[in-house]
Image (spheres, rainbow, N blue to C red):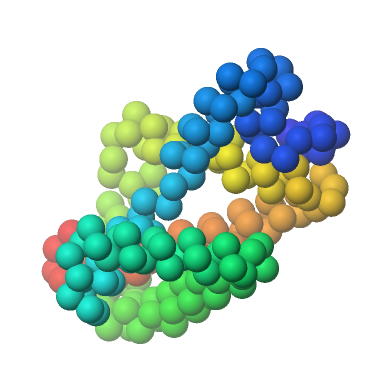
Length: 196
């Protein structure tokens, strides 16, 4: 919200370009390498490795290599449009499956009243039961978006600062709802298991 207009006035495509402009080519190369490693989808690669192991019986390392190679080939052949389509499909699968699962999970434990009865009222405290410094540290991790290379590339590619603002506000609402559903599903699962 604060940086979109200023970034939109710059003629850059990535954080590495910003580094090159201010600090030269060595900083650009270092920034590009750091951005690459920061942006590696490690969880997705591990998911591909696990899927390869469970579905086909591949060793984890081979599942990771084969799955990653297929993903890179698909994206290279299909380009940005293919990447955008798979992102939309993944988002819809995640959101719809969670939205469908949570009501069933809550119904199985008697709703939030059943969760409160089985797990205790501390699960409904606004800041939870974690120590305040732990909660603060966790909240500060939300600021990691300010060092996310893909965030800046999307801001640089946006039509206007207004488009960035609107996308950001919609994104906050959608992800807040998603996070709430994940927490509700976890609480219902904990209540179903009888422990946390």
